[in-house]
Amino acid sequence: MLVLGDGPEVYVFSGVSDAPMWKQFCDGILVGVGALRDRVITLDSEGRLCTWRAVDGVKEDEVHIECRAPRQLRHSPDGICLIVDRDEVIIADFRGGKRSVKFAGVSAAAFGGAQPAFGAGTRNGRFEAFGADGKPTGACELGAPVVGVAWRPQGQWAVAAGNVVSLVSADGATVAAKLDAGGPITSVAVSAEGALIAAAVGNDVFIFEPLQGRRLGVVRVTRPVRGIAFGQASWLALGFEDAEANRVDLMTGQMCKTEAHPGRVASRWGIRVECDPMSVRSAVTQVRAGGQPIARQIEAEEGGRSCLWYLGILFVMFIICTGCTGLLSGGYWYYAYMR
Image (cartoon, rainbow, N blue to C red; front, side):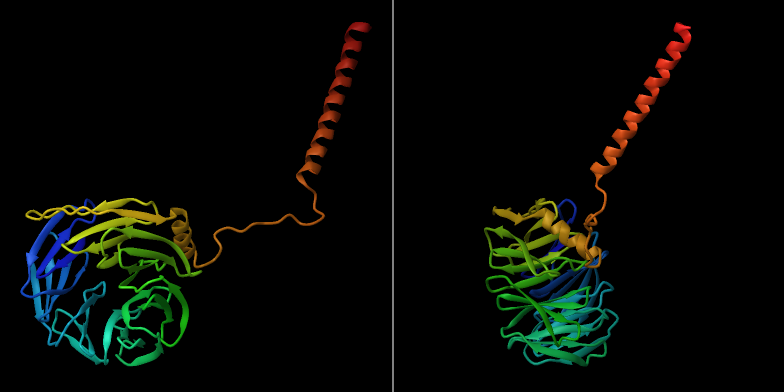
């Protein structure tokens, strides 16, 4: 599915055909949406955390979270929710469980490897990692307000601050590498395998591979990109205003566009993928190989016998064999006709 929020409405599209599936009005302005295999999750400005049945949009659960100014929603694969509130991070589930971690100036957060461990950044440029017990494990300064946090399965945080996506160690204490997007980043996303990192800058989305820190290309759109998220394999979704979106397969260059829901007029915009599919394929394959070389070139040993030497031996043997055959034929002819 593709799930988009527009004011108080949630719009759901098929992730296969991009056709409208359903839409629903919520009680407040949406500040975050999410999707599991069988459910859609929404969070509104009043702290209402709801789940909707994926197939038809019937509301299943609603929990009211005590918060002052919620601004971001993240969730784990089993439906545990992380909410960025004013000066705190809230972890909640639909069974009524709730835990709050105070963190002054928090602006973005995401779950990490051993959930409910998470990482969070502040408007002052500080990033800090927290263990499953909610206690900090390490911190670093990034020099610009943190606008996005994502987790790599390889044990790294991808933290967007200013023009840079910093790759931070799992404990939050060390910056291993920096990926420069060349402009102020608004959101960041990491593919499921951790092979690709996407960073939105205005109307562009830059694609990086983190192993060598290379920029693989860019997806250019003629309208501002409001949100990005990876789906299966190398599919990347780009969300825009008015509940519209594109899907791009970075490995093949295939592009899809959502159809308008009934009662809405479809907009027109341009999109261009400037990304080498072979480079994307190589990055994905290298991560699947554990960072090891995919192939190895074996050099011939100095002083070894070459192919020409063996061909020469074959030629000599051919001459000898054909020569012997000729002698035998001559002997047979003499014996049969000359006697």
